[in-house]
Amino acid sequence: MTLCSAYLPDDRPGPGRLSEVPLEVLAAGPAELVLPEATIRDERGGDLLDRGLLSDPSGGGGPLSSAERDRAARAFGLVNVAFHTQRALRLVTGLLGRPLPHLVVRIGMHDDGRRWGGGHYRLPARTYDTVEPTDVHAHGEVHLGGGNGFLPAGNGETYFAAPSHNLAIIYHEIGHHVCRHTADFRLNRQRWSHAQTNKKVAVDEGTCDLLTAVLLDSSDIYGWHRGSVPTWDRRRRLLDGRWTMTNFRGGRSDPHADGTIWASACWTARERVAEAGYDRSRFDRMLLRGLSLSAVEAGVGLGVSARTGVRPDAEVTEQTLRRRRHFGALLEAMLRADPGLAGPVLVGMAEHGIAPGSTNAELREAARAHLLVAVGG
Image (tube, rainbow, N blue to C red; front, top):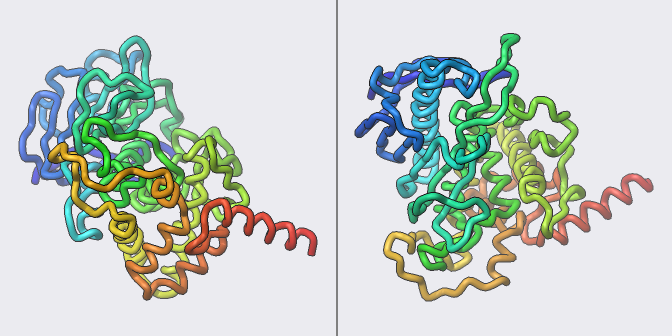
């Protein structure tokens, strides 16, 4: 273990509390850290780590800072991502009882001709909505942009919005790696290793937001970089009790918005578990093991076909894909993973109009009918 600089979550607006934290590193290059769980690399190169792993965030660096401050900010971002990647994956490994495949995280991506302030999770596919400059690792990659725009730093100053400094973005994208190698909502294990799909569904996006909330210990996961969005606006993605299946749209709507309903329901159920006298981590374990169990029950299994490039016998059918999208199907798997939590979890989920066994459309119609009766009564 070696000490490194990283932000830790806190309740103040801003990137977090600057701290010195331990990090297990297997190997280090000028702009790369190899961990037991992941490889983190700044694709813009440069000798970022020649001064060690204790760096100053330098306000995120960016185009308006000096070259030295921008280098320091990039070095900090590399190490910050490494720490939080290791933290997230070790938490998941402990709860699942098994490790996930090695993850590659690439920083400074898609900055050719424009600055990108976001992140995404990529699997090798025939086509992409954003052109990938190099081959994507078969097990999946997290891509983080170099940053775009400025945010309030919480101290009266501004902060360059580098995704590598933003814990919520980091955790959410790692969440997609967790979902891919547990539930596998899009059945990528049943596709050729070079022809997987990067399309996300609401239950995937919502699970990633819930994992982010667990790691941040906050329901307002995007409160820093979406602080200008009102809390009553679903674009804020606040895990709030107001989001129920009455708000579900489905179809071609934004899966992040519909995912907020699932994430909010999980957050409420997690609180009901705590109120019933159980540790919240028991719900986290229930969710993760439910993700894996749902894959097994769908006939997907836990083998990673992309490791060999051999396509399994099972075919990807629209009917199977459709069932993988339903909140009620994952809830059923969670209940089988830990029947002892059924009471508080069902109560929490019901507050958002979610019940086991029903399709999303059925849950939406039932929730809207209940609302009409309540308003009429």
